[in-house]
Length: 134
Image 1: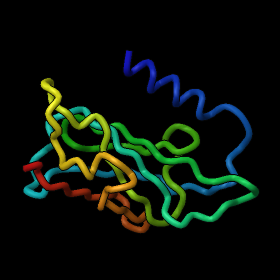
Image 2: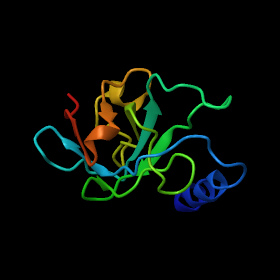
Image 3: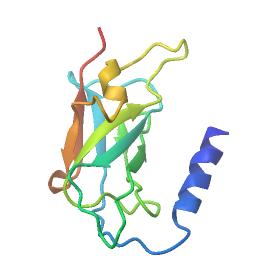
């Protein structure tokens, strides 16, 4: 069911008027600081920092699904796999819980408002490192 919802969002994102923004194809890997893989099917959210309004529009947040090796092959902002608008983006981690509901990353990494993670489209592919929770 979750896969269906993600696919539906990707299809709907491509509908409607054309985006006024240019995008940078984005991909990368997320691991713990020691290089080990985060053991969950997580999703990354990317929020543009200081992005200017263009033609009355604000950039949409980016989204990427992470595979079992910690890699994400593409980020979607407007149309599937289009990437991110150029510049810096805050990154939060969703669905980072084990089967018992225990967080697999520190809580502050799960919200755009509190995450310390920042990536820059000048550094693709991204290498995102996260501390293990205490």
